[in-house]
Image (cartoon, rainbow, N blue to C red; front, top):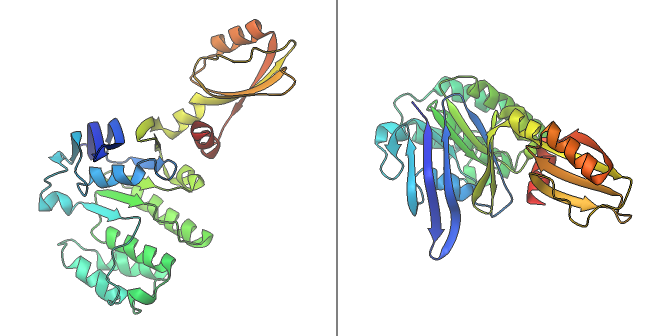
Length: 292
């Protein structure tokens, strides 16, 4: 069964439109990386999918149930790590986990104990004295204890040091290795997504401007270096242009394009009387070019 299905989702706060006509699906086995600038709508999208914030129009379902009225059985299949944790400050980490676990019939104490040791989470200390990174780890443990079929993480590693982030991502890969589980992982640390995600959502101004395979995205987007024998036009009109920058001398330019095939590239070179070199880009460079 499809884990998440979204059709023509719109979300507004009053007269302010935040999400525009988003349609996509998440299947079991998918690890979806969500990237976008601050304010692009990433958190709103995740909260709307999960039913925390009502959608304005369209549809969103989780395991076939409408996100606006999920049953307790479906909710028990979801693990969520919010951007801002909702921990109870006066409880110790251990009591916080015990409280959360009491709501789930299949809570995995052995898994939580192992991860707490590996991540060095001080479970006997009160939440109010934990560091930001320790709170994030504890919040993640709370999301993993029920062995969710859908794991949604909103900026879960922003307060972790590089070593802790690496350990977390290794564990995420282990969790995602279960083909029956789906993961949606939002982060501003783009390099982390390249380690764990097989699909990418790029959110820009409330729109899903890329939804697909990570490798396909890297193949699709190229940076072209143009070396012309005569002055270039002021506007370079390549098919699928994402961004274009021209040198002061008018003979050289850099153009980032999407889905430009070899025949189109050769035609452009002939029309411009130029030599064009093509360069592949990593996810971070693609993200920066799209949000230029």
